[in-house]
Image 1 (cartoon, rainbow, N blue to C red):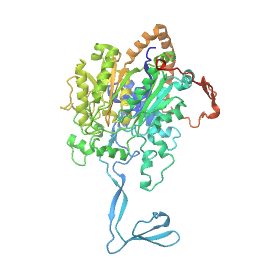
Image 2 (image 1 turned 180 degrees about the horizontal axis):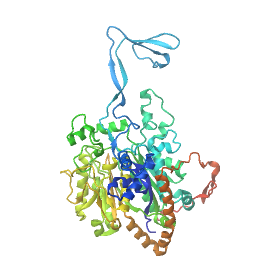
Image 3 (image 1 turned 180 degrees about the vertical axis):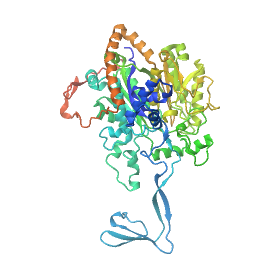
Length: 620
């Protein structure tokens, strides 16, 4: 049996550029290069997402522009000028004991050494401390890093459904999964009727887990701050919870599930799982993604302590600004230029994959196909966070896989690479050398390099998903986003065989053959994916399945496009709501019918085949 081809039939989500479906997030990055009518559609979509006014005026456009992409962190996330913390103070009693009054219920148990307590009344006590004591004094400080790639101003995913104290990353997951499913233009009920329940895969997670106050963040700091841990902090904090939420509250899926974690390469790890399931025939549908909401004081302080983030001080030094002057937060992330660190970001992106036969049967959209994801470690390392040689292997194999599919000529002239492009001094040297050497070796004279973190920031586990979704937009509209935050490429960047530019570059999308999506993660987690352009994918489908099947796909595809257009209209006007099914269609032991041949579930006719084959007959 020939290997099944994983076809991208839908995608959705949200990041600093806005909603991903309809290519609106991509369009926001290149909006100044688009025809006015197309640009205004994306401005209207952004207004519908955020609840802002859209009246077609320049003032309205400017307001929407200012409230998207990388910018100063807004107070609803946290106050960067007054970040709460506890100052450690050691006090000593001298001639007189330290004393204070409080309610009896506020006394610690057991009492610290040197505390003498006397009752004042039934409720209050007087405390005297006759020796030194350490106190934690609540106070505030100014954040050293004030820029982030945050969701567009006014968009609060938890307000679109009954979020019930869900961490922000899980709220974003519900929106992203719903957006991606609607973008397919195919009703999930139809897919459930067509595909066995155990042939659906969901791989989604978070590289950092849920670290805000409703997840692990609340779990680890509640008692330290004199609060109680809630019953939801621990379960909501698990890194694979995005997949669990999609299964339980969006799809009602009974199929394969989980997440693979590889730091900043996590999405490609999950993508690898999904395409392997489809290629092997274990699944016919795979929903793959990541959701990351790391814009919290604690996470940012952690990366800042490593010297990894672009601080205000570093940005001022780059631009020759004086102390106290505000840097240009829009240009905080500067891949492959003189830079000082990356810019953290939040994002949730989901991609829907069908096998090629199912895509044709249902008239699904063909956005691209993903044939390979290569993962390699760095070997022995001097520093766990330092880059190593593993990424040379993954990029070289991804390019070699593309060459095997599209040939030498198309490899050299009709492809692009989505660089990890974090905006750190180390990345600009090491990644550019990897990409340049691979391009030189394979005869690519000027390999177009795209670095979308310049617009979106670095969304950790979801970063490669941002890159993939942007690639789909490039193949739809034909504009390579320039690295608009840079003035020039840094002198230590290796670019003899790379095309790096700060201006948008127009290409012929119909001539494109492939893209390599590159991701590098802390600890030596390297991954590179080979993605085939829609034109190449469609020709492959027609060749494998024949002209009659392709004509039937074209007829069915019209209805898919019509349904997707209906969703697009509702979403752009702010009327669409995410799918969230709480306590809906819950199955229990009374819904199971079991035999040696099959397992039946519920009244929907769901079945699982138990007549499995021996895969190792020659060994028994």
